[in-house]
Image (spheres, helix red, strand yellow):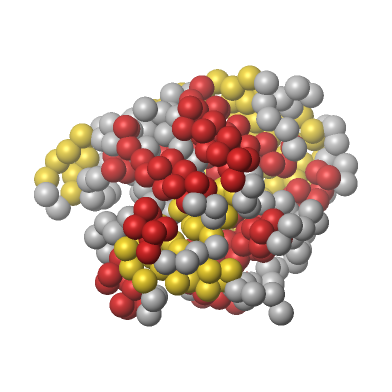
Length: 349
């Protein structure tokens, strides 16, 4: 039996709500430390984690780790991932990868020098519907592909929604919907086509700059809607739209070919159905469930995150084969490609 991979988590938000239970449910990982400026000691006591630290640097110096999950806020991704890489650790970094292209390029170069297993936490590549869609593309069933459509609508940033002020609403600290959610859309398009675009244009929009929380009103500096148009070398175009100010919750990811369309759609990324559409008929297709489906009771992100960890483990173990889900680990190079597109439409310091 392979030795457990000793892992530390940086970040007490998504790191504690999703990465921690997903890592603990996975057979190969042993969570031995968590780092957070304010919440590490409390979470460590509540969740029975051996070590608690106030920073990633303290964690790296204070215990023996094989790997680090960087789930700190975006403004800390660069420094935390860089420190972990320079300590020779395997690194899985949340998105957005960095605050700008220069930071992303430095992380790619440092990852290559470290020679460790590095990846980006684009777990939605590993949802059953997304895997089935990628298989249709790989098998040529949708060729020739002409257009990708990705639309995610939600209402969590409508003017009436009370959300606490903080880094999420600060541009210089990596806040906004582009880094948080459009990054997934960009990665989805690039991954399913297996290429990066030759042209990217788009815009960021702030419909509700004045916001309220329990302390009163404050000004949002960041986008609550993000929109990109990508053109690839083969002529395929991707239309990507993420809007947090809509009246409805709706998700669509479609690949449109000349003879057939395949569509993942539903209320959200975590609630989808999969269809094939041509001139003759529309068919709903069954997707093989994740082997970790039972862990969705924790939260809907846990099963695809565990599938992503499978791909990370394969890279840590030196395997060149794809994971059991057939998907490769999203790489630091993928993160840089996404960062360049985000920068082209206005995301960054």
